[in-house]
Length: 120
Image (cartoon, rainbow, N blue to C red; front, side, top):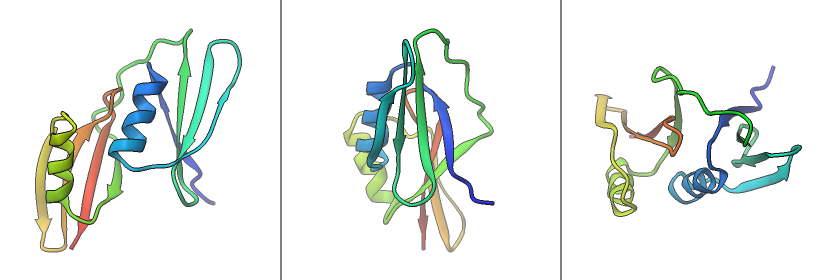
């Protein structure tokens, strides 16, 4: 079995695309209308992608605090500087639970916890 994508229901497609493209660094692979008032976008390189769905008829609910999406970065310290320069807040961290990994969290425009991880 192969994991294909993670779906996030978003309230504003433009804000969400800007975050995942500019902050996370994902490329937009596909964007299309999926019916009246509904739009879908797929982002990411490789076999696993993020699917964003914006449905004007569906109110976005709270996303679980227990779920996060992790993305590998070259340097946690450089990414924190970048995040702050973009006017975003670091939600938690940085943490270094062992000598081989360091990470921190931010939230996307919809409240989804995004983890940036440096493998050392």
